[in-house]
Image 1 (tube, rainbow, N blue to C red):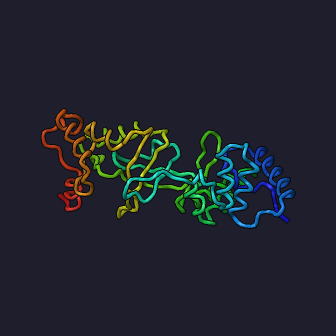
Image 2 (image 1 turned 90 degrees about the vertical axis):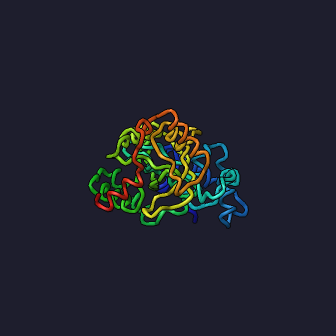
Image 3 (image 1 turned 30 degrees about the vertical axis):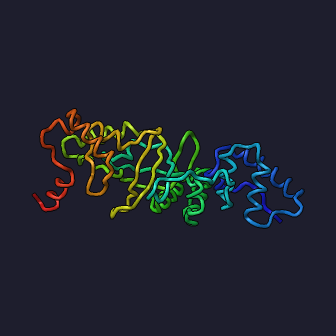
Length: 284
């Protein structure tokens, strides 16, 4: 017997209401009864779902497939070629203002409905999210908060976006190739404010190249098609971090700001943040 009841945790993966979800399951059940033979492999099951729900929103169909760990349709999983050296790409949820601690670091969240994330959600995290949903429905907010803390401790969070709760994975991103003034340095505050202004409330595209010793993803960030590191360098609110990134364009953008005496270049001899950190470590 195949169970086509709507599972509690599905709402974290799709955008439509529970009522709409129930309608999908009725359609799937009817189609399953007619299927001869019924699908046996994950690929067959995926094709069955896509065909049955072909008139429904793409995001819902992809979310349903992700919830059950089924393969996405080829057109959904096909990716454009990425620049050399890129390990993976992130498409983030809107960035919160508080997620920007300084001018070269951002904390972002990626929905677990994302095909790359959907198959990697730890079982205990998904279970805690399902239990939290039931606890909130029962108005047991103390238990719901405890479960959410467990989710947070595991590197995930449930975000409320447009009255829709989304289970998302946390990533800390270090902007590749630039080094902004530290918070207590001249122009540290301005660098942070500029980065906040650029990314707050926006969905970002992040190309991840590496991981640093603090566990942060080192990557290039794009916001509405604009290269964020380029904007920070051109405004004189970051240095080209040439010890770790030799891209010629970064050096060029830095020199442009320097020639115009923008931002930190208003000073004739601004202190380099990596030297400032070294002095701090040595107690100077």
